[in-house]
Structure formats: structure tokens, C-alpha cells
Length: 429
Image 1: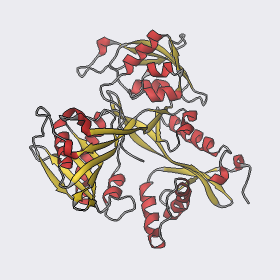
Image 2: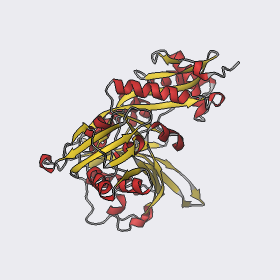
Image 3: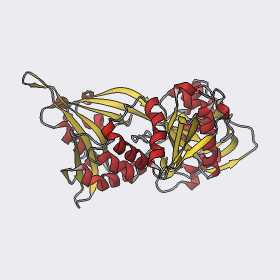
Image 4: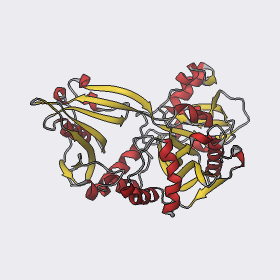
């Protein structure tokens, strides 16, 4: 019999080193996220991979009548913030409640407990990828990065004569052997742009291991770009699909991941994928909304943008710590009042960015302190989370009624938070 008093069900933790316990716990998110059950012959491998994936992480949830009915996972990661590089972040995932136990407060209890723990341990930020958009704004998370789907007509792609070229060479490599080099390229890339998340060794091993449930498929290929000294400075992972209409090619390629240290390596990788024999269309998901490719082409219309979707949601756990973690391009002084019904980030904060403290790279460290002064701008925790990485306009949020303040104060906040590149996170977790 189901316990209707869900509030009486205690939160329980799972030992991530216990593969059997993890497999039982993992059944709930599998059902909630519409994942198919593994075939009987694959159950042992499925359980091992699940335990490997969550090693060292925090697993919790709720058990009713001896069975898991709700789950929650979090782990320490790194998030790149403007001007300052990676900072610690509490990453949240595998949040699920079975349909039999919804609307009984289980999610709120799990998320409140975890965010309270994260703040007590010194985290100023939490982040997640939302399966359902309406849910997490209520818990103080705001949309901090977006990504776009691209469709490129390979036959129409001609690179401009002034488009940068790389100085190295391209090499097709086996993913399973090359993952350390891929990881090094990605690590440099994610540190260079706001929104980047760390990918642990387990992430790479599972993605590149042949035959794994989360591995690249048999049609996937990896091309590595090496600079003039032979060091990897870019890569593209892509898969191909063969299709013909009579003897006319309808073949396509899909870019699964592409990172480069500079515009030259970036151009070389895209040019390689776009020149594959027989391939007429190249698609890519979860790309930055300010993708450079159209600017390198004689015909930018060859790149068609599809859906632009929210990706990473960020929540401040400590308003002072969150604002102090990043650096700033614009200067000025503002008092912000952050409203947080859950209490974690609620505060009045003096944000002062002095142009005389600007570094040689053009970024400025801020002085951020709690204050009792009257606020210039009032905003919620979710709105601050959306603004922190520079991908959301304070002016737009004010026009939408989600930020309050004089037009001048809101414009000043917008200019202080602005970044040259849109924040981008392509890493699922």
C-alpha cells in the first residue's frame, strides 16, 4: 500500500559504491525520463555503468514500502564564470518522482536539503539542466545559457578568403585511444567561455568506450586538429548517415561535439566536416547561439538556425559570493536586493566595480558586500542566476516585470554584467 503521507517518509542516502543499491535507485529516473529497460543480457553491464557514472557523488531519495519513489543526485563540479575562469558549483541531476507520489512535496524536501548542504559547505552557486522548464524557477534557478540547433547546406559552403586558417594538420583518430587529448582540448575550451562545465574522466571513458550504453555509436568518427608542434588544439566528433534517392546522395552528417582553441583550428574542423564525400547536409545540436561559422562563409545563409533552447540553469546560494565570483567589463556602483523565499540567497548587496582596478585583460574585480542601504534594483534569486553569466539582459527582464529599478539603474546593471561571448554549455550531466 502506498503511504499517502509523503511528508512522513524520510530522505535516504545511497552508497554510490554499492552497484546493486545504485541500480535499484536508478530505476526511478529511468522510468521518469522515459528510458527503455535494458535487455536481460545487458542488466549487469547497465548496473556497472550506472555505478561508475555516479562514483563519488551524492545520491539520495525517498523509499516507500521498500521501493524507491523519488531520487536526487548532486556532485561538486566547476562552472566558468565571466573573467574569472572556473569556480566551484553544486551540480544537480537525476531529480525524479514517480507519478504515484507527485504533488506531495518530495521534490521540495530533496532540493531544499541539498541546497542547504551545498551552501553550508561554501558553494555560492548551483546548476542543473531542466527537463521541465516551469519547475525550477520556483526553486530559484534561472536560465543562464542557451544553445541552438544548426543545419548547414554543405554544397553552398565556401569559406571567405580572409577566414583564418589553422597552422597544423588534421588526423582521424580512434575515440577510445584519443580521449585524453579530447579532454585536454575541451578543458581549455570550457575555461575560455562563460558557462563551461568540467567533464570528469568517467564522462570521457563512458562516452568513448566501445559498446557502452552511453558510448558513441559505430557510425561516429573523431577528427583531431594538431597545431604546428603536434599538440592537439581542436577536435570534431561526428557521425554519418547514408541515404540515397536512386543514385543521388541524400547523405548527411551530424556534429556531436566540436571545440577548438582558436579560429583557425575551428575553421579547419568545420571545413573538414563540410567537405565529406557525398554529404549534403550537416547538422549540429547544442551549439552556441553566437556560433562563428556563418561569419566565415561567403554565403552565411548556408547555415540555418533551428530551435534556440535553454540549457544550463543557475541558482545563487549566496548573493555576495555569487557576484564576487565573477569579474566585470562595465564599471559602476549599485545596491541590489535579492529576494529569495527559500532564504539561501536573500540579501541586500552593494556591488562596486571601480575602473581603476581594471586588469590588463580588461576585466575588473568587484567589491561586493552586504549592506543596509536602499536598493537601486530589486530582483529574485532566479533572475540573478539568469544574469550572472552574461547571457540574459537585465533590461529585458525589467521590461518583462521581473527586475525592478529605475531605467538608469537597470541599464547600468546590464552594462556591468555584459560579456563579449554568449555563455555556452554543451555538457549534459
